[in-house]
Length: 351
Image 1: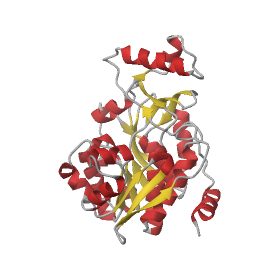
Image 2 (image 1 turned 90 degrees about the vertical axis):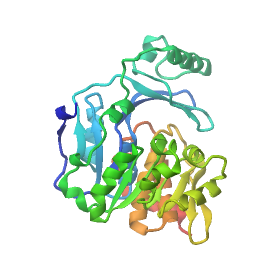
Image 3 (image 1 turned 135 degrees about the vertical axis):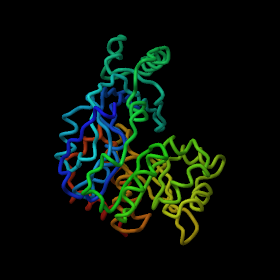
């Protein structure tokens, strides 16, 4: 219940450099090589905050945290520079977590869910699954019937994020990233932060990409950058090549448009030349792609606020994403070595 929530602020009297708005979830992951990571603390709000934190020292998070979200992870976020003053808290515990099961080509299955303990209780190894074991586990999950379980995403839909949970001192923040949310939540956040002159970026997720462009026009018209994935871009502009789809969105959104292409990088629409520009992904040994797009978005926000250049911003995002995918969990890159991150930017992307 909303009335049972309370605010616990870390540094809530300070203005963060940037703010991200999104979820805190616990996920079960099977990497492309079969490695299993159960009960990983993540969420698009957490991943985008950490992505931004690679470039600035203080990032505010607007989210909700249930009692089953790992408290040691929250402590690591706070110690690493994530201001949790915008997080609403609930005593409810959730048992069901989504499974992110990855293929060699980067695709993932994310429609199945269960508690982390279910894998071992069903007689499967909990550290690594061979291909035939993974097929059997998928089939087991598909047969599973637990209608009373509430997932983290369902909980967030029932308890949407609200401007009333945001500390007053955050009004003058320079930039805000909106992770996938319902359009009314995004608009409420834009209304809240816009008087302070914030730059807004947004990731559509299924909340926006499943709707007609005319329906999401009120959100698109107020963004400084719109950052869909390749799947989301195809859903919004069916049948169009990525460059042509970006041109369509550029006619709807006054800000930058970039499509995230996973391990290939990002394609950024250049309004000056009326053509797309490719920003390659960094070459790293990828273990867990979970949160890569969200981390990219957090880095993109930081880069856009700093440079005003969408192509440069995508380079910031590429580095943030690369530092997430080599390990499991949203808190894995903390504490961030920002000097090393800047050095990587200079070496990888400067002429």
